[in-house]
Structures are given as C-alpha cells and as structure tokens.
Image 1 (cartoon, protein in one colour):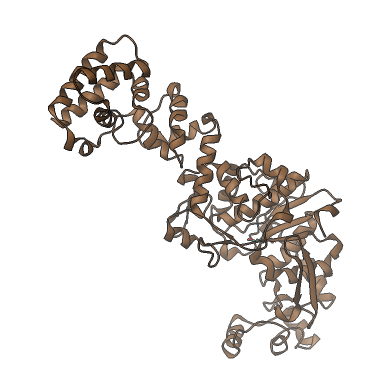
Image 2 (tube, helix red, strand yellow; image 1 turned 180 degrees about the vertical axis):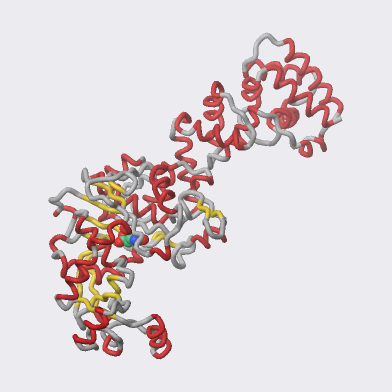
Length: 508
Ligand code: GLU
C-alpha cells in the first residue's frame, strides 16, 4: 500500500488522551497527520480519547487545543471546533460502542469475563508475567469456562464483568505500515484485551476502531508505542468493519534521548535543562510546573520546523521550512524507521534562524509583553527598529530582555567591575568633556557622535579603543549589544548624558 492508492477524501485524526501536558512527540504526531492531510486537501480531526476516567486530568484538553493554536495546526473538526461527526469526546459517545462488543460476543469473537480484581491479583502472584491470553484464559472465570447457563445467571444477577476479545490461537496478523512496510504479529504474543469495561465504557482498543470507522478516517499516524496494540486493532477491523475500510497506518519513530539511549522523557528534560512539553504545564494535583518550549522563548515556526526534522527530511539538505513548505514537501515515505535523537542545541539553532528570518513585527507584541513582565515598558515607535538591531544576537525571545531592554531602561547594576581596574583621572576628564560636547552638538546621528567622540579622544591623547568599553558599560550596563554610537543615537541626548553621569558617579 502506498500513498498513491488514495481515492477517498483524506481524513486523519489526532486522538490524545487528556492526561497531562503535551510532550513534543505528541505534537510531532499531530504535525505529521496535519501535513499529510493538508497536502492531500483532507481533513484533520482531533478526537479526545477520555474513556479511562481514572486518568482524566482537568485542564489537559484545553492545553491540547491551546498548543495546536500556538503551533498554527488548526483542526477542521474537534470537540472544540465541532463538525459533522460530533461528539468528538469519547466519553460523550459511550452508548455507541456497546453494540459492537455485543456483536463480537454473539459471533464468538469476544467473551464475558467475570474475574474480580482479587482473583486477577491471585493469578498474577501464581503465574510469572501473567497475561490473560490463549494459555491462561481456560483457567479463568469467563463465558468460555463457565456453562452457558452459569454465564446467563451471572449476567442476569448483574455480576460485574468485562468483555474481552478472543484472539485466535497461533495465527498471523499482518498489515502494511506506511513507514515500516509489512508488519507481522503472531496472535499468541498478544493478550485478550478488554474491549468493554465493567462500567460500560469501552476501552481505548474498541473505541479507537469504532470511532476511526464512524469518523471515516483514512490514515492514522501515531507513535511507535502503539505498535504492539496494532494486531488487536487489525483483528477488530477485520471482525467489525472489513479490512478494506481500515485506515492506512503509520507508526512514527520514537524521539530518543540526546545520547540515543531510550525514549526521551519529561525527566530527561528536567535533568538536562531543556523543555519537553510544548507549553508550560502545571499539574493540577502536585501544582508542579513543567516548562514548555513556548515559555522558554521558542517561536512556533521554529518549534514546528524542529519537530518536522525529527525523523524526516526532504533529501535536499534544506533545513529551514515554513509550515506551507512542509505541507508541500512532506512525504510519509521519507520518515525514518529508526528513532530520532533529540538535540537541544539544534532546536536552539532553529529558533535563532527563525528569529532572524521572520519580520520582527510577527513577534513584536510577544516581546513587548516579555519586556513588560520584567518591568520594561517599550514604546512601539522604536521597538521595531530596536528589535531589528539586536535580533541577530537572540536565540530565544526572552533574550530580547537583555539585548533590547537597556534601550528602554538603564541598567541598575552596570558592570563597573570591568572598568574600574583601568579607570584613571584622564578618562574621567574625557567623559566630563564628552558630556559638554554632546550637550552642544547640533546633530544626533551615530556617525556624528562617533566623529565627535574620536576627535575628543585625540585631543585628550587617549585611544578611542580604551574608552569604548567604559562608554558601552555606561549606556548598556554590560559588555554586549550593537554598535555603541547607534545605541546613543537611539537613546537620545538626555538619556545618553544621564547614563554617562550616573556611571561616572559610581566610579568616583
Ligand atoms: N489515545 C491514544 C493516545 O493517547 C491514541 C493512540 C492512537 O492514535 O491510536 O495516544
């Protein structure tokens, strides 16, 4: 099966369980689904898989939609956006699943299991690595081991029970994965998964198949961690809706730790000092906040670009892609099978590239807010020009606080220590004269200011080189920033002179 066989309208889905913040692997799954759908003029559906109410976390669903909005990956249909296949939250679709579980029982492809939690526990203790499967189901309390009469009376008495799939013994289940090619499982490797729980809620396995069918999903790209569940899904498709209606699968490679040893986890990010979540996530129970790429100062363009490169390239060596370019160039055939190592330095590189590449107007409002959060009030008039002047020096949006903040607010703690050792009366005199000269100058352009500065230095028999560092510390507060005369031009006469005077006072 290849992409070439598409003849229906492409419909993909992202099917998150709202259990917490969205890991970057989850956003990459969204991205690959989205790119594929948009490339084929198809629909991108977001379905909330909240059938496991014990894992439900308040706020997680809103967080998912906010992340998608930030990334510019807008769903065509979802629990938030609505659509022709609503509801898009599985808990609200509860009545739709039971008939399929019942049908499977009737056809001998599933069975009732009455084992209590204690009974299952006992078996787990008796049998090493216990699995409810071909080898053990005969030892358990289910409609396969009980007589029809016993089963009926247990059901009539309302005895709590689940419905489990009955996997055929020792059979091969095959499917073609768009990334991995042919994948084969033996049913003996798989357990009899629960399809319907005692509370009447479907499990993920039943719900995902029923909903992918009902929502007319044509392609389903999901993380590699779902590969072991695939044989159950394939069998369910075969039993319920026919394999010809099944979506084409692609199991996306894992995102690995920077050293390549295992899957990248939130803990790796905490340990190594980088975000693994898209945006800040505050766990409602522990109140612990996990830092996100957005709050770390990443641009969504860079985040998306970086995610696309985790496991995919277009073969041309091009690295910087806009979302539109990705839609045009993405191809599932070029996604690697092997895991993609996460490289935070590379992520930062993407961000720097995007800060340089985008017009500053596209992130000016955000930077203004970041500055305001630090008590720096920037006026729009100069902000655009200033951001242009310093953007080459910023890796993160937050770097603008240091690189641009001093234009609006003098440093409270200028780096006096770097001037002091070489400070002398001659230099003090020079700056006092400079204040006078600048007070009188009729022009206030960088070139004029530089000329005056150099002439005055010559008159004082000082090398301009020796005076530049003190001048920079006076205006900027530290040893960084663009050309110092350009800074003075921006600051204007009063502010420039005030800053010189302030630092001279501190050097006394
Ligand atoms: N609900 C599953 C998850 O939380 C979705 C897996 C799938 O896409 O089939 O990731």
